[in-house]
Every structure is written in structure tokens, then in C-alpha cells.
Length: 403
Image (cartoon, rainbow, N blue to C red; front, side):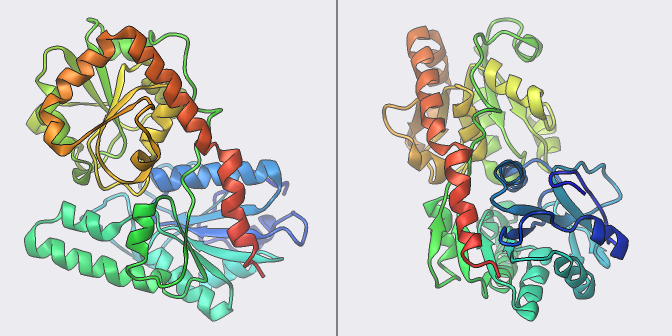
């Protein structure tokens, strides 16, 4: 099979495995990414897709993503994508789109050993698939790199209450140690994520921001279009809140300060376990997941991007918004906000300034010259995180260890 041919297989047999063997040069490493959360659009799945596309284009590595496979949803493919069905599946009350299950070591070993040449295992998430991958890497003496993409302990505390939150955080901490404890290298997309990783990983943690595909996200000549006509036909300020619809994203705070302001239309672009709450309590407009040109249109045609989450390990949607030339108003946090500066097109609010959020949004859009200048500055800011600049650094970490 030619490199780059799409492939999805669940519990592949020997004939199927033979058809997905790497066809690159023997000295080209194969990076086997184990990720529990690539079933729906999120930072991890977007990063995996970007890395696969860049690796296929540059031939610097072969990237294979191994993720849970489920019968209850349609799963697309992008590059080498292998679906693995667990032997036992357990519902996940915290994240329904993250599968919990027990994975057969024999089947995982059969898959990993089918790839010839130098290889390295990359653990993208500390879920049960990631823990299984760490165990397999130790047994097979394959180098293992950890990617701390999700601060699960903090998210558990945010999503659960009182004792349940503390218990969930302890379970998450246990999984962190099991998944990442034996890694030979660690990577995190921001310094705040690296600090969290250092609480259980005692080696060096490389900080490489998520790459932005500046060819996929770019400014448009006008903000007019179908998305704007649908959600703000009356000329009001159109605010886009893009990302996974989850409690820890501080979405109630967005609703509290923007949803009942007659000057603003606020649209939540995404989906997730908190969607029903937003629709029932706040009568919020939630689009569901948007992809490709539809997602790009949301960025290009909105007036402002708003983010009040402070739990991001990077904040990829804010980065995508800046690449599309969308001015932003955000709450002070770590991760991508740390890379912005006073002369960028991102206004950073301190917590005590939250009551002024709606007025700031309206004032920024009304000042057309400032709004246009912010759009240009944001595009320039995003170009510093272009995929062609950052992804070679990521591959280099793995290539140095692959054997």
C-alpha cells in the first residue's frame, strides 16, 4: 500500500497488518501514537491529524494513530489510523467521548511488532489505552515518549463536586504515573502543562506549542457569509465561543456576561457533555461540531472570539482564531495566552474586569480601524506557530530515541 493511503481497521488480523506495513526507508522512524480522545474534534485529534499530514508530505517520519474504535459512531480516517476495540468496555461518566476499556496486550503487541524499522511509542493521553501502551513499550523495550496534552486531574476537580472530584483527581494522578512514569522523554504544548507534568515526571519536559495550519485557517476579505447570515442577520455583534462544550471551559460565565446582552449574539461552536445544560438553562445557541470550511467560516465571519476558560493546556481554538484573523477577548490564563503580548489582537481581561466583557466586545467591533488592526496582528502572531516550523521539533524528539 502506498504511504498516505487512508486506512481504518479494528482488531486487524495478520493479512490486514501486512497491508499497512511502513513503506518508508528503513532509517525513517515510525511514531505510534496511542490516544484515547481522537473520537471527536479536540486538541489531541487535531494535533494528530496535523502531524500525520506533515509527516506524509515531508517523509521525515511515519505517524500511525491507534485509538479506540466504537460501533456506535461513524469514524473517519486521515492517514494511518487504526481502531482498536477493547475486550471490555465501561461507560465513562465524566467524558462520554473517551472510551474506558481493557485492551489485550497480545493484540497490541501484534500491531506494534508489525511495523518494521526504527519505531517509538508516543502516549498522547493517560487513559486506559495509554496505560496499556506504556506497559507494552516496557515489555518490548521500545522507547516511549509522553505527550501531556490533557491535565485530567484539574478537569476532574472542575467537573465533579466535593469528594467525588477529589477521588476522580486521585484516579487521574494514578493513571498519569502509570502512563508516563517510564517514558524516556516528555513533551507538553505549554509551560503550564509542563509544570503539571513535572509533578509526576522527574525528567526534562520539552515545551513545543501546538502547530497551527496557517494554510487551513486564514483571514477572508469580508466577514459576510452564510454563517453570519444565520446567526446574526440583524447586524448585532457576533461572538463565537469555539471548542468542546464542557463544564470546565467556564461556559456558564460566558452566558452570564454575554447571553442576555441585546447588542450581542453569542454562538457556541462545538459539542460536548455540557450542551444540554447550556440549551436548557441559558437557551444558548450551540451549533454542534463544525468541520473544514464550515469551521473556517465561523472564524472568518464572526466579529470576535471569546474564551473564558483557564484550564487549557494550550488553547488550540484561540490559536486557530488568531490564524483566521479573528480578534479575541479572553480571560487571563496560561498556555496560548502566554504567547500573546500587549500589541497583539488579543485583549486579555483580568478576573476583576469580567463585568466589562460585553462593553469591551461592543466597543472593539464599533472601532473599525482597531478591529481591522487586531485582525492583522493576530494573523502575524499565529504565523509564529506554523506547522512547518514546530512539527520538525516534535519529530526530532522521537527520531533521537527510535530504535
